[in-house]
Length: 339
Ligand code: 2NL
Image (tube, rainbow, N blue to C red; front, side, top):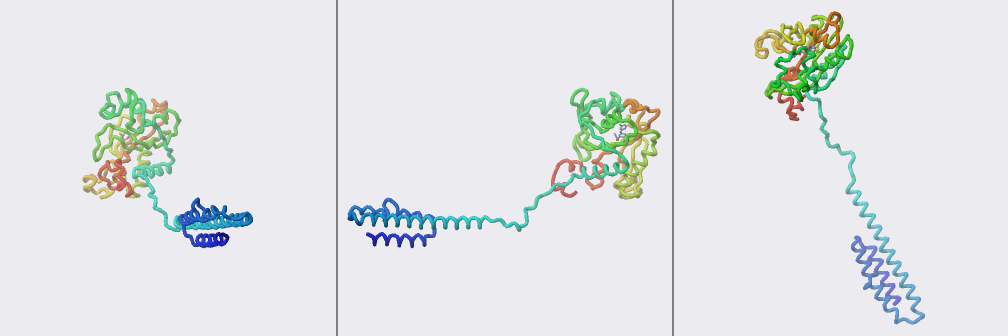
């Protein structure tokens, strides 16, 4: 029996050390130590032994069981460690590989030109004024000397929210707030979204962008207006750029003018782009109407001012040679990536 036990130990140890998987080790444990295992089979025959032999063999059997158990569990943890190591090696990350490229957004062409114009005016000592896009009828129309029967007030042209609240049709409403709250000298521009009830086509959109300017101080004249706008256009279009003022009418300015810029293509000679005019109409301007100043609590016998309004879309379309305004609002990345 002693011989049998020694043989079992020997073969179990050698099988354990040559096992190369956790599954094989589990099978080995069952083969030797399980209920129907080889060691158990021997122990069942202990009854046949004499009372002197029994404790000796019993002790040996226990030692054999312990040896086999520790051999199997030792091998088991070695295999588990190896498995873990292989898993780690397979999952390791190569931090020297190049990263996945991230696509970074960019400024919309309207924003690029808006920022450029803001910088030009900041350089001339202007501040930037902001205000609500949802406005009272008073700030959008009445304070700007737009009579109740003016066509701009019609629901055909303006989005009304209630009888006296609307989406602003011009950013002049911002300037009315500034004049009410601030004493001259005033030197501001008000860029922002404005809304008109227009059908969408290549040159119209119900939402568009305006930049208006306002200067109020003692002794402001039409010459200040022309000088300011000429500086703006020279910075936007180059030093050889010329502007021209044509008489016009706006209810909120008197006198009023439309401002043309020398055609960038033919430099005033006349070509297809300017329809042989040599000049292209770009904005409206004038001397702030005394009624508008008075309505905002500014004494028109002491102060005078000029104001102008320009459409950002038109300037952006000219700058980048864009023929259809809808492209600016469709948010097609293939279009926007070009700027
Ligand atoms: C255009 C050009 C213009 C103004 C806007 C203005 C603002 C105040 C007082 C007087 Cl608070 N005027 N803004 C002046 C002239 C032209 O916009 O084509 N508008 C329909």
